[in-house]
Amino acid sequence: MSKLYFRYGAMNSGKSTHLMQVAYNYEERGMKVLIIKPMVDKKGGDTLVSRLGVGRKVDLLLDENDNVLDIIKERLNANKKIDCILVDEVQFLKEAQIDELFEIAVTLNIPIICYGLRTDFKRNGFEGSTRLLLIAHSIEEMKTICACGKKAIFNGRKINNKFVFEGEQIAIDEQNDVNYESLCGECYYKYKLQ
Image (cartoon, rainbow, N blue to C red):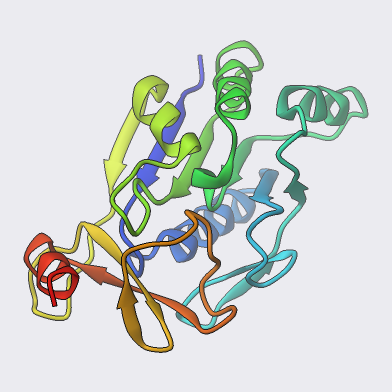
């Protein structure tokens, strides 16, 4: 039986870069990967974007209403081999889609490795991440540091280079003057209480 993996971390922890490295490793061995990204993540369009300047086109942009299980079964029925599924920005998927990924791993025996954020800039869980924390076979934190040097666990949202703590849950990095910065707990409160 294959497993559903969740690798989470604050911004700048190397999630997208690691995903591309895993894809490369599979492909170097002649295996086929399917890379999925939620359509709501407009950054890079149909391309994964790493802060290191590395990019890679995705195989499937997923809409919030798409049934992942049906899509994968359709590809397999068309004799398209899939040795591993890699999902970037998984926090944006719906709970039902996470359940479908779990079912794919268990019933179709395809390992699925998901990368994403655990919480938003207000420290609330994302729907996809919350479900993964409950049902993933394996959960791994990818670490990064705050500007002060401590371990970062939160994502601070900046608009016009100023930290904000109110607003919609989803605002894509580098669009409409929005940027994110990884923060430790101490720095999060330092900026919030200013």
